[in-house]
Image (cartoon, rainbow, N blue to C red; front, top):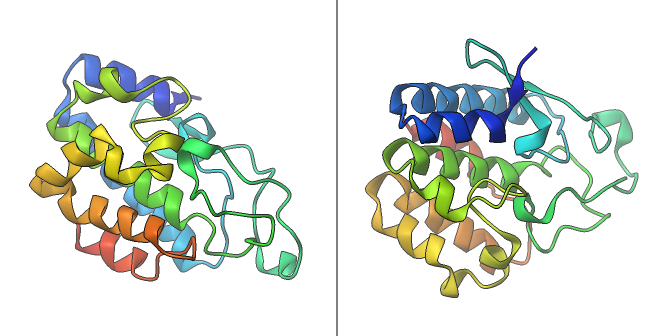
Length: 183
């Protein structure tokens, strides 16, 4: 029972409820660390595939692209949603690391919304949280990246998203460290 993360964020941002936004970010971090430490991946983490209950607990739904170790060597059955995925993701990327980029972008969005809930209205198009596919394709021209690099809380996170976009791999080797050292 609950609503999607996108629906919940709209309500919390409209209410400027930074306490609940902080709890959502913390719960998303816990969910992400669970996935990252246990060797499996969802494959399509996005706002519509996360249900938020009344206590702000998070549950993943829609497991069409899930990866478990028994699937090693197979091709990915889907590539996820463009506004949550690295532009280089292909069907050959099918392993426990495929959620790295979407985890980092969602977490960065949640941290940004704690301090600036008004940006939800500005950047959300109902197919994303804050980032769009175009932000990933042209990060140096992105208004969102410019905004995030000016904020202390999101400066390092957005730097590593951009670094990932400049890389020839979709994986973020220090994803665990990035999440763990964030408060």
